Amino acid sequence: MRTIRIISRFVLGIVFVFSGFLKGVDPLGTAYKIEDYFIAFGTDWAMSLALPLAVLLCATEFSLGVFLLFNIFKNFTAWITLLMMGFFTLLTLNDAIYNPVPDCGCFGDFIILTNRETFYKNIVIDVFLIVVFITRNRFENVYSRITELSIAILTISIFTLFNSYNIHHLPVINFRDWKVGTKLTVDNPQPLEYYLIYKNKSTGETQEFLSPNYPFNDSVWMSQWEYADMRVVDPNNRPTDVRFFDMQGKDVTDPILGDPNYHFLLVSYDVDLGNWKNIEDIQKLKSLAENDGFSFSLITASPEENVDSFKAKNQLDVEVYQSDDIDLKTIIRSNPGLIVLKDGVILGQWAHSYLPEYEDVVKK
Image (cartoon, rainbow, N blue to C red):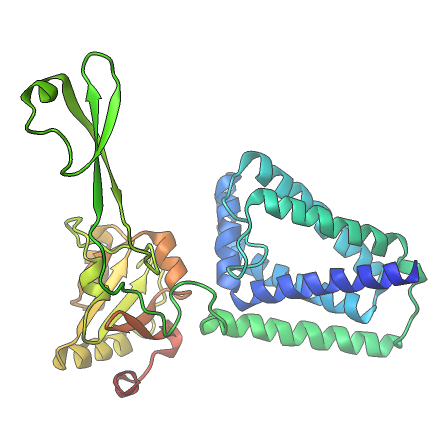
């Protein structure tokens, strides 16, 4: 039984440290996931609490894991862990049944689980937790109270600073598709496949054809069938699904990603919510880049009228493209953030507070 107690405590501690660390690497990503829950449950008024709650969740989860591994604050740790797991087990049960959000983000972007998988994972963790909770008073006290307090203060302080660094800079480890060094273009891409769906005017039956392999020369067939829909299949294994569009709705993803020269992408999922205190540095970067013949673009999900107002207010005459706000939150955890591409490769990413010197970018 002693062996079972020790194994259960270590497994539970490692899972909490692992999960807390992965969330703490990307606290903004955790905050976005909390926002998804607020939207799903109709509590939009709490959106401003998402980031503080994300930091609290990351720090609490990681600290509880450390407490379990060191076997300190036994009763406190066991009770808080029980309450947390009770809440999240019920939450993930609701997710598994009703699917209000597609992924709870329990392991950040490192491991993506379905809602059912997350619920089953929590059930397994609960088994170890029950063993730890029931036998919590049978573990020996190894450290003095002063040592326990020292471990707790050190753990919470260091991890809170770690959270803060990842918020104000960018995540120290990037588990998403848009990481530095990633090649976003496909060599020798295959053409898109267009499947045309036709419906029989009399029976309602549908048939699908890979264009242009359909009987468009058969006048009798064409009189009996009418075009109903079309689906597009991309046979290429692309590194990213993010798409960019000009203000007229034309897809300009491939020209941007495939630019053989330096292409500066200023990304802001919402220009009205962005932190533009370094707008002068942005203007300087834009001027230097365009003087050397390189492109500088703003990618946003904001409506055109908001963008026009923003450009006039900040005297930023820049080419603007649009994309999905969730995609933009995914490709860089900063609003705004700067990404530099060349030949489809991500050369660098910077948060708005730590923009680079132009010469360092080109040298890089």
